[in-house]
Structures are given as C-alpha cells and as structure tokens.
Length: 127
Image (cartoon, rainbow, N blue to C red; front, side, top):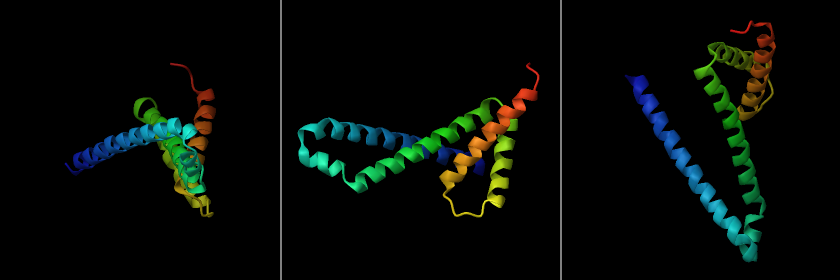
C-alpha cells in the first residue's frame, strides 16, 4: 500500500517536472526569438549565470536521458541488465574514492553496464 503511494507521488512529480520543462522551453524559445531585436535582452541572456544555468540543465537532461534509456531497457527487455547496473554501481562506489557528483557516477555506471552488456551479448545464442 505504501508502495502505491510512493509510485503515485513519483508519477505526480514526473508530470510536474515535464510541465516545468515545457514552460522552460517556451520561455527560452520566446527569449531566443525576441533577443535579436532587443540588445539588452541579448546581453542579459549572454551573461555567465544564464549560460551556466543552461549548461547545467543541459547536462542534467542528458544524464536523465541516459538513465531513462537504461531504465526502459531494464523494465521492458532484459532483467539481467538491471542486475548488472546495480552491481556496477555498487562496485564503482566502493572502488571510487574521488569526490564526484552523482551524475558523473551515473554516466560511468551506465557506460560500463552498456559495454559489459554488449560484450556478454556476443556469447549469447540468438533466440
């Protein structure tokens, strides 16, 4: 029962984030269309805080896209891939003593799992 509540909360958050991303896209699109005719807006959009925020958002969305691709693979195709991702994350967290961000760890984990999956696939017989 608590699991259903958690999934409902997660679904609500995903809907909210999706809508927020759509609003951000619309606002950035409007700003991009107005900027060429408004030098002050162009200058404001080109400041370091603005470009940094966009770069961070872009990187986060790329990381989420990678993660969601793996998640969809695990949920729809290959339960072994999920086990490998979990094992890879555990081994990397114990081996990696560097202070890196969660997104960087996730990138290395998904790349390692993909490489392992492709290497293991060579030994499998086709269905």
